[in-house]
Image (cartoon, rainbow, N blue to C red; front, side):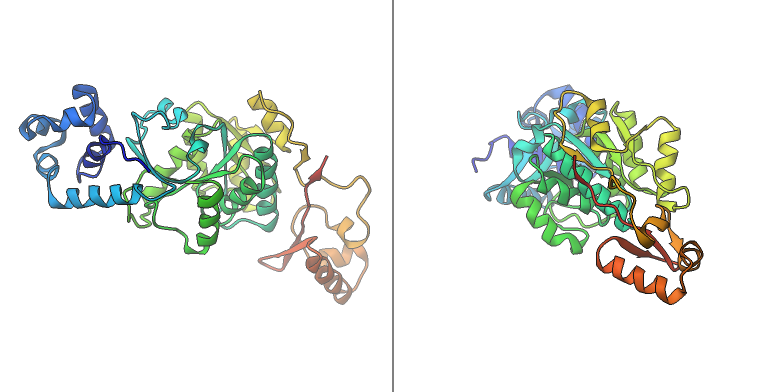
Length: 365
């Protein structure tokens, strides 16, 4: 990869301790490109960034970090994108605090592709993960790149669905681009680097730090046309992403769920506050406009005929064995045996507290 000679100046500013993104943007407005900023005496820059940050600009620590970043960017498939680059995502230029520098690994063209964020609980239900993957696959096939945060649960399922569709997926990291978190998603991250795109605003080597993830969320929503929340408890971090989306003028969508499920409470709260209730990928596409039909019925659609036996008696809310015994008129042994068969067949999942829930599979419409 050919390295832009001005990139070192962008890195020098962005990697200086104590020089935040907002201060960097002030310097750019005042003096122009980073090369022009750095051409000024440090005493002239100190009123903008403080004397400690001005002194750190030329420190060995910063120089080493710049060299490391340039070496990383020289590897095939690695990119460092600045605010001045044509490849910088145009959607991020619309938000209040776009990062000056983005580190990217994979298909850089996806930064310019129409996208939708798909987020939700890390501790998702099996049905929630299935919904996320099927919605993401459908939306990806409808020419929307899927953006999420590489977390366990809904995020990972959304990435899998995006990779399976035509328009792939972008993972926005809360760590450095060279740090995979959580480690359980290492294989998924590798697949995204090959066929999608990993993106981070944080310097190389940045470990998982709690306060970086809410900051990361504004990029997930900022890069997208809208934000779909699949499952979320009331305290879920995905609600931060949804609020960022609303603040940025993006559409917010939420999938409703059981009134008894804590993982539905966040989605229901979003719907009460104005998010659009969606039951299929077509609902999302209709709101965004300009996208062709996905060709999927992606809301875990019921079959045209009534499900026979115990499955038909379960309904769609979590249910315990005693209740199923009463509904079916069966013994506990009969119900447990049938539940095991349905679970092995992928039609039922066991939940904490001795509850069971049916799983619906999306199908082409």
